[in-house]
Length: 106
Image 1 (cartoon, rainbow, N blue to C red):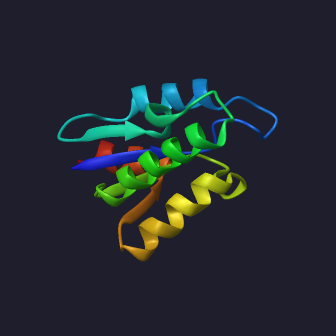
Image 2 (cartoon, rainbow, N blue to C red; image 1 turned 45 degrees about the vertical axis):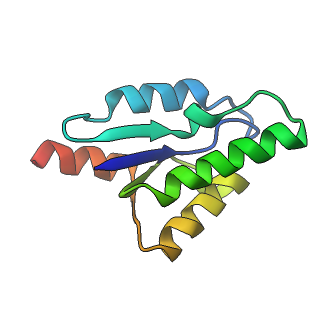
Image 3 (cartoon, rainbow, N blue to C red; image 1 turned 60 degrees about the horizontal axis):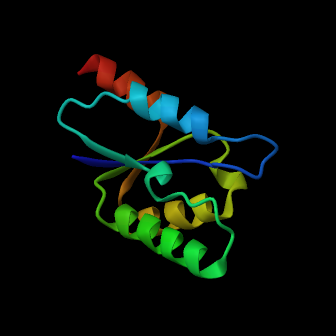
């Protein structure tokens, strides 16, 4: 199963990269290929660099079987687009805590 972990990385009064790195580390990897927004994050605000990073993230959403969300996704514009795309394509979207809870049961 291909899993994509998404969440806000910066710009909400905190830097979410460390939080996402910890979350990714804690995701059960048994039977899952996990990627995250961190894999495509670019420090540059240059429009061309940003365009490529967003395109890469959306491509990963399209090829995922499930999207796992961090807190405050609704406050990040790129996350909102990722989630809209996933729902449009009927890709399962679950909060991080729910994914962990379900993994413990299985």
